[in-house]
Amino acid sequence: MYNANPYDVIPAVIYEIIEESPTIRTLRLRPESPISFKTGQFVELTIPNIGEGPFTPSSSHYITEEMDITIMKTGFVTEYVHKARVGDTVGLRGPYGKGYPIEEWKDKNILIMGGGVGMAPTRSLFLTLLHDIDDYNSITFLAGARAPKEVIYKQHIDEWRKHDKVNFLRAVDKIPEGERWSEEVCLITKLLEKIDIDPKDNPVIVCGPPVMMKFGTLDLLEYGYADKDIYLSMEKKMYCGFGQCRHCVMGKYYACKDGPVFTYDMIKNEENIWE
Amino acid sequence: MIVKIQDFYSFLHRCQKDCLGGFKSVILPKKSQHSDDDLFFTTLSEDNDYFLDSYRTVDPIRMLFYFPREIVLPAKKSKCKRLIVGAKGCDLRALEVLDKALINDDFVDPIYNFWRENTYIISSDCMTISPSCHCNLLDGKPYAEEGFDLNLSRMDDSYYITVGSSKGEELLLLIKEHVTVSKVSPNNINSIKANRKLVEEKLRKQNKQYERTENYYDLRSVDIEKWIEASKSCIGCGGCTNICPTCYCMILNDETVTKDFVKVRSYDSCQLHGYARVAGGDTPRPKMYQRFRNRYLCKFDYMKSNFNLLGCTGCGRCIDTCPGKIEFRKVVQKMLELPRKRVSSSGMKIQESENV
Image (tube, rainbow over all chains, first blue to last red; front, side, top):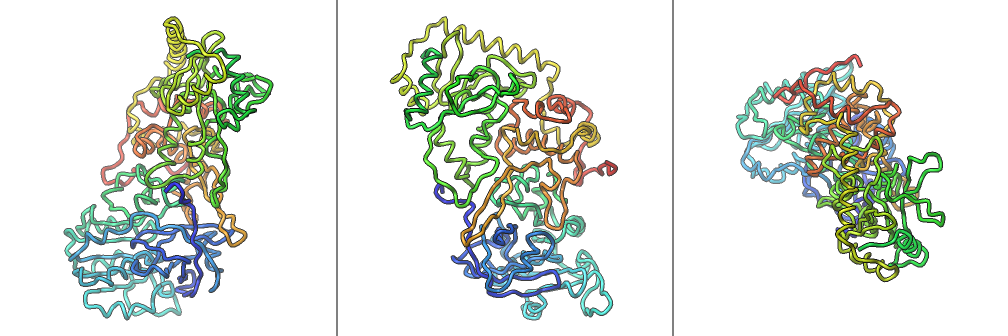
């Protein structure tokens, strides 16, 4: 351990880019050496000479030679992510954090809520669960986006819906003029009214913008989910990934090394959780 | 063991000049050119204008182990054995915090770890105190109790040497090899104890007005209005965190220009607006009082849960450096006064005042 440099970066080549929406794209990467991770863990992606940011892979953790990362254009580094081209080399560090405790979810009815680009980490979880679908009782995926053109992973949806044990509901907040949508039009939290899952001892995984996390959690509590069964992905500034830089501290926890996935039970009394 | 001050300095000079014990440099506190009250760590030179027995330096010892800007990838491997002399108890307690933060099961900072391994530390008792010194409010002493390799206690024209580690034993052998040492007498010990008591008494007197409860966990539930009031003259410069011996927040920048990745880390400060800002521009602490509060909570609450150590050693540097004249001791004391407002049990914070 003393010889390994914790800041070491693995170069990765972009072999394909999928434009998911006007502001969201998926980089398909081939790292120089395979990167093993557990779904829900994150990596630090470097754009050389620009900077680095924390992202959760959106591919299954059973695939280690390639990695998909879905990224929204929203800040300095991500602007350059959106300028990157096929054949460019980026850097990867990690994986960091704890990941989803999927081994505890055998035979459960699993509910996943992914809002906007929050679908990215939950897609990794979903694909990993699909790989062992016999181990689980059912998977319900609630996906939300602001408008039809911002719905991501459109090309996969039919295939995902083919599985008997999968119930995949999608909603958009509104349909702007000129756009078409044949599924639900409501806030993602309203989709809870359309499903019928016993909340007792079943896990629900939430990932999305802070406002959705906050109100989603309140709705889930009302629905009957226990604090310990609500898994939240915390969005914080994570420079290092291993608890050194302290930017992601939430009271006694580090979002990077203790998270980024926490149960509501763990963090409900900590500082700065929704902001 | 007792060594004459003159002999001790000649030993230090030989360490640096002749590489005794393999030491390449000797670092110790020197008076600033601008003020007699300010001491800075400096590499030993011929002028002998050094003060081992005064209070702590302006620059925390952290700055000798964890530099303001440093290339961490690729990590440079240097071979340099150093001797730091005149470290103070408060700074050694701070190193304990940094050791837990930077050398642990999840992560070892290669550069910090290198300097920790290759530095020998000789501490010295404080014979005077600065008006901002308040280690006694944090259960500290004006002399090092642990964390040193050797410790010096001043007696007239000599130092009484205490060994604190196996590195210290090695160092003492080296000293004995090159300069004359004599045995200690019970009288010597008594005079050291009396000196220490005297300084402790000074500290107690100086800080009596700032005494407080030690229920630091209560800081979380202090009424937000009190933080707003206390932070009124804070300009958010980050001076307090830059000079704090236990602050180690950093940012990591990418400075890659060829195909080899280069990462550079620099100090950061939770007092700055952009500190915790995420992509898209949101920050959990947009207001000054929130960042001000964060520093106190980090020191007395978060670090306590992370490392089982307080993040404040009472060195008082933040008081000296503050352009807003914020008296840290007074703020802590005030915050721990009753009554307090509780955070609601659902974990949702009570609505905070927005017009600040």
